[in-house]
Amino acid sequence: MPKLLYQGHGSFRLTANDGRVIYLDPYAGEGYGVPADIILVTHQHSDHNKTELCAQKPDCRIVTNAQALENGSYNRIDIGGIVIQAVEAYNQNHKKDACVGFIVTLDGVKLYASGDTSKTAQMETFAALGLDYAILCGDGRYNMGLDEAAECARLIGAKHNIIAHLQPSDPFLEKAQSWQAPNKLIVEPGQEIELRAGL
Image (tube, rainbow, N blue to C red):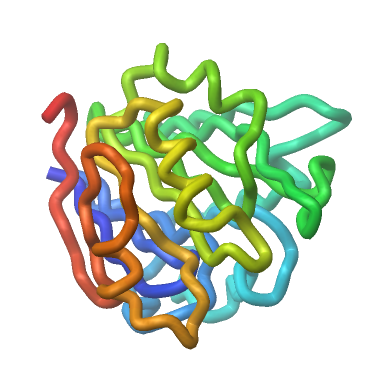
């Protein structure tokens, strides 16, 4: 089964069944020594774009917001069967034309990573996609807070909802436990889980 390591803040590492590695918004935590096949960057704020932290294979593909969103079009990129679909991400602190979220499909698992955002119009279409996991930000300062993130979780309808990108000064577990989202799955910084499709 594919795996997800929550490194902290908005940073994640995905490992496919065949060993390929995807880093998403590298910045926080440990675990960057496994060479990357793909690096995804939702936007260019300094707490999301530290690609230099990641060991990289010679043919590593880096997909930034600039490649993912071109001329107002959210691109779909297929890299050897790993499908990356860029989606909307925006709020008063993040410009719509400079930020994206990603829906990543690997080994039959569909995972949405919101990046930095508040509720978007496009989220209303996500329930039809049958997402397995949704990773939502919730710091309530630069992004939506926990209440709005729970509203988004209900709207998106993923089988599992994971909260991330809380304020660093907040006690993570206490905040995550207080989040009133359906199908909540708490993944603490440094924790790795197996990803399951359809369950």
